[in-house]
Image (cartoon, rainbow, N blue to C red; front, side):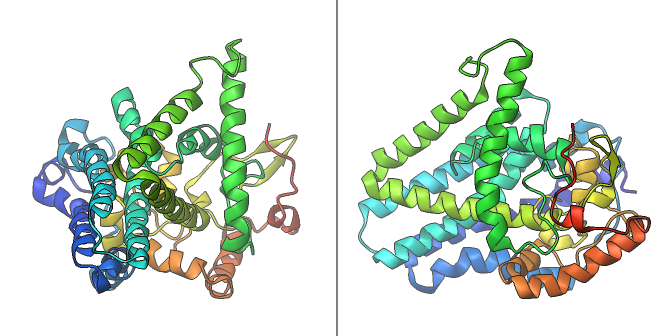
Length: 377
């Protein structure tokens, strides 16, 4: 158990600021071109995977009752990031519009790296912010999502995913034996539809129509329109095209992570449209130290679903007896997910072992594999 004093020190929080290293790499790629354009993807995927192999697992837990005042240096990076990302994204759009140094393909490669940045870091930080109580933090999360044109993720994540995870009603829970390339188009469409339906239902409970000003989709539309408008103002239609390109890469990064977080995991159906409560066992846990620095403990996902509003420094690690464990951190696992035969070879035996460990009484898994159990009420 890590007590309050170490948590409140800047030096203990600094590893979680490692995402800042990606910003100068973006600019070095823009200025130098060539091999520098691969720096951000290589650092995000391969460097942190390599660091995981040296730093190993981090199994200690902070006191979950730590006062929020002790978390200042941890919170600060998530509060500064929206401005830093906006300066980087729109600054690079202005830069490529004002110069002709990069070739067309180099420009595309540059904004592929930007998409890795806005997806791996930006969307992840928005996820941390959207779960917090202060409205201004949730607004910062909305701004980050607008920069990748995925604002509805907030509604879907808070109103649908957390409520229905590991049931047939959750489009984000990847089914057993479902490859990522089948999962990706399905989740893109279904999350937008489920987010809209969830907000519409909330308004209906308040006797308000769907076009009511309280519908956050109006806010999403305005913020995304402003982001696209700024891209056009800075770099014309080229700016819009590059903005759309990096947004697509960011969404791909997000959904790769969504795919691995709950792959093959299901809550037991209790009958009459009811499912067991969410437990740590319904998310894959990964205690790999370096990739958790980059992803601000997102890989402690089992605890996040158990206590969704818990700040990232306080998320708890779980043992194999309580939650299933990924063999590698997210950088390696997302790369494996892009190769379905490799993914199934790694993960399907682990899903079967999880089923035998936690649900030995279930004999027929076909309704869970195909999500044909009744949807939760």
